[in-house]
Length: 103
Image (cartoon, rainbow, N blue to C red):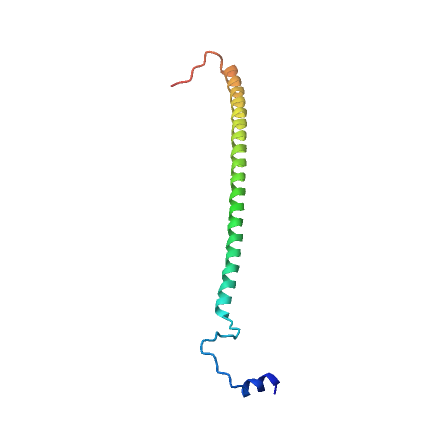
């Protein structure tokens, strides 16, 4: 047996009544809950960051599409007016200047 244990067993000292627990107690449940909470916080932060990035990208895309739609709409209107004017010019030449539509 170790010498320290033998000395303790043969000692006449009294056991202290208000001694602290010197065993290394490990609360596995508490440790597991803390680890889960840390991991879930990281996951939630990553998901939030991903959503924020996706929202910003969607806004940029929507602005780009809207801008291009206005540009293409204006160009289409101008081309349509040009073709309509050309068609009316041919119509007027064919029908004569005295032609009046029947209302």
